[in-house]
Length: 227
Image 1 (cartoon, rainbow, N blue to C red):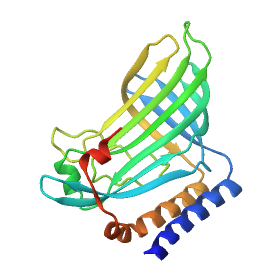
Image 2 (tube, helix red, strand yellow):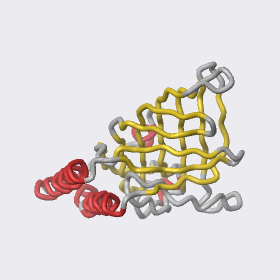
Image 3 (cartoon, rainbow, N blue to C red):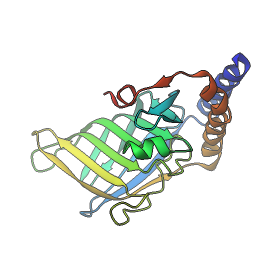
């Protein structure tokens, strides 16, 4: 087991170490809102992620499955939101339930990919943009892909369908007002070499999940959902 954990750490160190030294630049994301606002933001591809793995236990039926959570450290970011041009710092948060999914589904839990950014911007009509938040909540069955990549949004099927998502944004301004609503798109535009390295790191994480599954103690619903 110790060898398994050491392998995981080695994969993360190699992945993010190479990313920082060889590809120390920014990745571009673009997005549009349902109301027609277009925007973009950057994220430093060398930003480390803190990754944790646990076992979720559904206490109604005793079902168990692994869950992987990741939170990036702060990255410098810059971009646009409509007429606002901004700069600041951002973090990516991610939660991914792994097969067999039954406990998470029974408990109404979801996977997610979230961006939180604290910003400063130009003034437009007497206010500036102070923070931007993008939310992609998905069914536990969704294939999440690399850590930095927002999941492909499958849309929202009829109520009760397994891939219904909550695809939202919130923009907060200096005068205390908030603009929020649905996202129409959220796309990562990466350099192929950088995405390949980060994908390698994710493969390493999931390659050892079986060993972690056997060694970890179950955690309760409240442990996973506590803010």
